[in-house]
Image 1 (cartoon, rainbow, N blue to C red):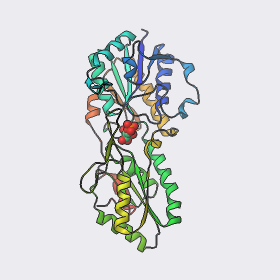
Image 2 (image 1 turned 60 degrees about the vertical axis):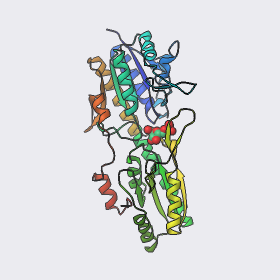
Image 3 (image 1 turned 90 degrees about the vertical axis):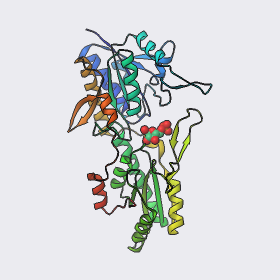
Image 4 (image 1 turned 90 degrees about the horizontal axis):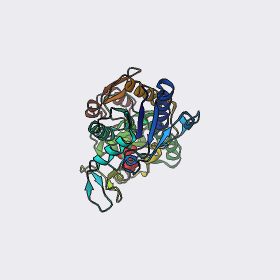
Length: 360
Ligand code: F6P
C-alpha cells in the first residue's frame, strides 16, 4: 500500500542531517514506492497555513548532498508547540494546530530527527495526532544514552580537535596558556574526546568537580618540566567555582544558552599563575562543518532503518547505534536514558593515563 511519510529536522542543526534526508527519501521511494513530504523549519512548518512543506524526490539529492552542512529543510529549537512563545511575550499551547497541520497533509507516518528535547516533543505531538512516529537521534552533545553515537558528534569532535591543533603552535610561539571552550549541553563528551585527540593538558567537564589549586599545580608542573605553553579545554556547561552557570538569555527566543566559562577560566588562570592566557569560544563552528564520513555513514544507516521500521508497522521507536548495528528502542526509554560522561569510563581513564588533568 502506498504511503506518504513526513520528515522534519528539529532542534539545533548539526553535520549529517542532509544524509538522513537523502537516505529516508531514497529508501522510501526506491524500496517501497512511497512519497516523502519534507516539513520546513521543524514543527514551525506545520503551524503555517497552508503547511510549509515540499515533496522530496530522488532529484533533490545527488552525490554532493552528503558533504552539505546544516539541513536543507531548516530547523527550529525555539517553538515548543505545547508552550509556544507568542510575539506578545505570552506562552500558548499550539499543539492542536500542529496536529491539524499534520492531518491536513494526510501523513501515514512521521520521521523526526532531533535530540532528547525535540524527540520528546515530537513523540507527544504525534501520539496525540495518532500518527506513527519514528525518531532519529542527532546531537553534537552525544548525550542520548540508548545510542553509542548520535549524528553530528564525530564532526563536532573533529572541529574541536582541529582548533586545538591550531592553538598549539600559537600557544608555543607566545608562551601562553590557551583555553578552548567547546559545546555540549550539559555533557562533557566533546571536551573529553577532543581533549584526548588534540593533546590537551587539562580537560574541565561538568561531570568532574575541579579545583583551581589542582589546575595551577598542573600548569606549574608543565612549566617546571620546560614546557612553555598549556592547552586547556573547558566544556560550556562547567560552572564557576561558586557554582554559577554562565549563560545568557536570547532576547528573541527567551532561551538560555551557555556563554563565558572559557573567559572565566582564562582570567582565573592568569590571576593564579601569572601566565599569559587567551581564550577561544568555538561555538557554532562545531555544528556547521562539512560532515565527517563517520556522521554521513551513521546518518544513512539511521535513515534507511527508520523507513524500514515504518514498513514493519513499528512506531514510537528511536533508531540507535549499538555494537556496529542499528537497533531500535522505545522513544521514551531513549529520552530517559541521559548519558553524561561517566568519571569511571574508559575515555576518562585514557585521559588520566596520558597525564591529562581534570582539575580534581
Ligand atoms: O544541543 C546542541 C547545542 O549545540 C549545544 O551543544 C549548545 O549548548 C546549544 O545547542 C546551542 O544552542 P543555540 O543554537 O540555540 O545557541
